Every structure is written in C-alpha cells, then in structure tokens.
Amino acid sequence: MPAPADSRDSLESFAVVARGVEKSFGSHKVLKGVDLRVEYGKVVCILGPSGSGKSTFLRCMNHLERIEAGFLRVGGQLVGYRQHAGKLYEMRHSEVARQRADIGMVFQSFNLFPHMTVLQNIIEAPIGVRGIPKRQAIEEAMTLLAKVGLTAKADAYPRTLSGGQQQRVAIARALAMRPKLMLFDEPTSALDPELVGEVLAVMKGLAAEGMTMVVVTHEMGFARDVGDSVVFMDGGVVVEQGTPSEFFDNPRTERARAFLGKVL
Ligand SMILES: Nc1ncnc2c1ncn2[C@@H]1O[C@H](COP(=O)(O)OP(=O)(O)OP(=O)(O)O)[C@@H](O)[C@H]1O
Image (tube, rainbow, N blue to C red; front, top):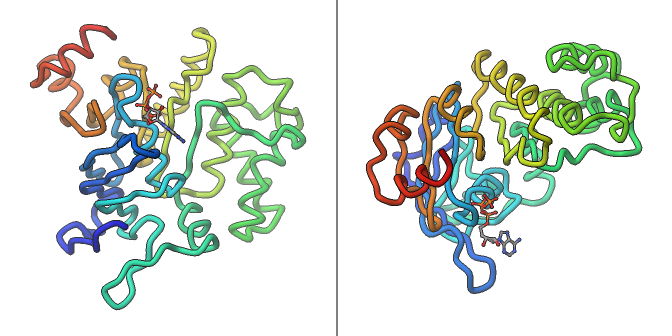
C-alpha cells in the first residue's frame, strides 16, 4: 500500500509527482523507488535500457499498474487511491475511469477498435465518458483529424491504414478526451522506419502547443530535440534527470555513458 502523501508534494503546480514508487511482478521488483516531477506544459522523455521499468512506470501513472510503495500524483490527485481520515483506499473502477479521462495514453500497438471507423474510434469515449453531444464530438474529431493530417480517412477502417496512420488516429483519439496529460509508451517502436517521422511530427506539434507529455522512447533524436528534460532509468530507478544537452553531451554516470555508447 502506498504511503500517505507528503504535503510538500501535493503542489498543484506539477502535472506529475512521483516519490519512491515501487512495483513488483511476483518476486521480481521492477520499480525500486522512482522519483519524478513533471511540470505542466513540459515534455519529459524517459530513456533507458530494455527491462529498466520505463513502461511499467508510465503505466503506473494511470493505474494500469498498481504501485506498492511510495506515491504518485497526477494533476495534484493521488493516482488510483483516495485519502480519507488519514487512510488510503484504492479507488473504485468508476473513480479510476474518471481519473483516466484526463490522462491520454498512446501505446506501441495503437489499440484502435477494428470494427469501428476512424471517426467512430475518436468519438466513442468523448460521447460515452465525457457526455459530449454527438454533433460536437464529430466536429472536434474532424478538427483533430485535420491536425494529424488524416481528414480523408474519417470513414476508413483501421485495417486499411498504415501503422503510422493508425498511430496518428490513436493520438487523435486520446486528444479527443481533452486530456491534461499525454502518456506515450514507445509510440513508434512498432512502425516501419519510414513511418516513424510522421508520428514524431505530430508529437512535436503537440509539444509546441504546450501539451504536457511523458514519452517513453528509444528515439534519441526526438528526446534531444523535443524533450524539455530527459529521465534516464536503469534497474528500476531514475539514475539521471536533466536537460537533453546535459544528458546527451555530458552524462554524469557510468551507466548513462554505457547506455549512450550503445544507442548513439
Ligand atoms: N505484466 C507483467 N508481468 C510480469 N513481468 C512484467 C510485466 N510487465 C513487465 N514485466 C517485467 O518487468 C520488467 C520491466 O519491464 P518494462 O516493460 O517496464 O521495461 P522497459 O524499460 O519499458 O523495457 P523496454 O524498453 O524493453 O520496453 C521486465 O523484466 C518485464 O519482463
């Protein structure tokens, strides 16, 4: 059970505050006390070797994984837990759903509904979860499709789209919920190399608009060019956090130097 929140970290000025987050799968401790702060309007890129716990940590941010120690706040609210009379209680499913509505998530594998058109994929949650009138949801979806360059594909089914197009739809679908925070879990890892650029360009546009973004990525160029800060994870902890130039040009730890030596 996570420890009760520390009042110093309940600052609303941070989009995300994590302190001492721990998570195990069986006897395998994957997160061993992760600390992180993300300011509103910033792009934080999480880098690190395979198996270092990056995706697990990201999934904790919207309670897709339940943390076991430490605490995690998004938008000033504890993720997945409610505090009452000094005790913590895990949220009911409906409360978690309400909390997740403010947090957009884009996965490596797109996860579009195959039996729905692009437009239906985008309007489903705004109508069903947010209660937005259908006409308005369609108008907003078309604006988002224009933003990701896919106006012409509104009536297409996902299977007829390239991976890059499907991922751009997935981004539009997440944005349709008007999230305050966007989480990206290796959004280009499943794409053919020639399709990576179109997805990164959409993400770069979002960053320029001031969207708060946490991005787990193996795209070092994106982290360097678009990230406001880079978080380097290894062995279930944050080993370094700094500006991209601090990290890429002057890594402080041997572990970061070894990682960069392999990926650059
Ligand atoms: N649901 C799960 N059940 C059991 N083990 C898991 C589960 N999810 C992740 N793991 C394990 O936790 C460890 C960290 O996985 P995670 O996906 O967070 O790493 P990562 O840093 O994102 O790696 P990659 O860059 O390869 O995606 C790995 O050893 C993985 O096998």
